[in-house]
Image 1 (tube, rainbow, N blue to C red):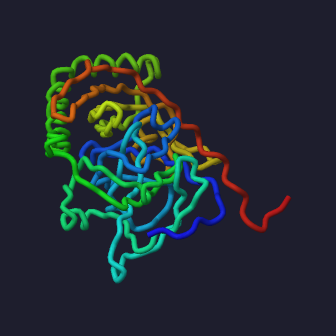
Image 2 (cartoon, helix red, strand yellow; image 1 turned 90 degrees about the vertical axis):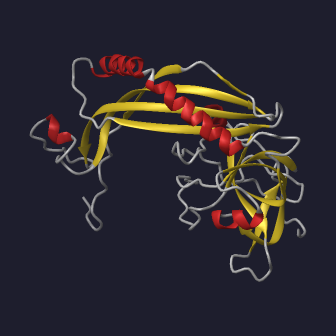
Image 3 (cartoon, rainbow, N blue to C red; image 1 turned 90 degrees about the horizontal axis):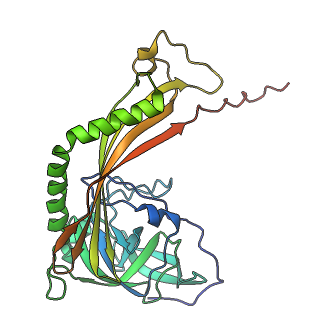
Length: 313
C-alpha cells in the first residue's frame, strides 16, 4: 500500500473554513478556524455524506459529491479509500503523513469517497460515526486537506456507541426551529437595535436575508457528539461599483434593484441565535441556553480597475 518516503516537504495547503447550509449539515467552529489539528493513526469522527456546499479553496476538481470527515475541533478533510486496480476512478496519491508532515508516502489504487460509493460500502448517506485508520496508521499533519482511510469501521448504533448521529441531528434541528418560533419578537428587537447602531436613522437597502447553519463534530477525548445550530438574520445598506467608476443612481432604491452593475459594498448588520447540543455516545442530549449576538461587518468598495493593455503614460 505504501512506498518509500521521498524528500520531506512541509504541507502547503491550509484547510479553509467550510460553511455549509443547514440542510447539508457541517461547518467549522470559530476555534477550529484558528489552527487546524493533526490526526492520529487511528481516530473516531463523523463522515458527512452530503456536503454539497463545500468549498475547498478554488480548485475546480469535479468532486461536489465528495464525502468529508470531521473530528475534534472541526477540521474537515476529503477521504480516499482503497479500490480495485481496474476501477475507472483509481489513482495513486503522494501524501504528507505523520504529525509534522515531514514524511511523504505513496498510496496506490485509491479513489475519492463519493456519495455513490456509500451504499455499496454499507455507509449511511448523511452522517456516520466511524473509526478510521489514517494513512496506514501514520496519521496526518494539520494542513493536509485529504487522507486515505486504509481501514474504516462504522460505530453508531453499536453496543459501544448506541447513538444514531443522523437521527440525532434531524431531531435537534426540529427542536431548534421550534425554539426560534418562540423567540421571533426577541430576534426582531435585537435586529432593530443593531440596525440603529449601524445606520442611525438611515433606512437599509436590503436585501434582508436568513441563513441556518449546523456544525457537527465528534470530540474523541470526551466521546461526545457536538452539534452547534445557528440562525442568522442580516440586512444592510449597500451600493454597487466598478472600481474607479462611480455608480450613478437616481435614488436609494436603485442601489439594490435595477441600479448600476458591479460588486455590492457597504455595511451588513444582523444577529445570530445559537444553541449548542452535546450528545453522549449513549444518545443522551443536553442543550445550552439560546444566545443572541450582534453581527456587523463592512465590505469595502472595489479597487480601481487596471489600465488597458498597451496604454502607457
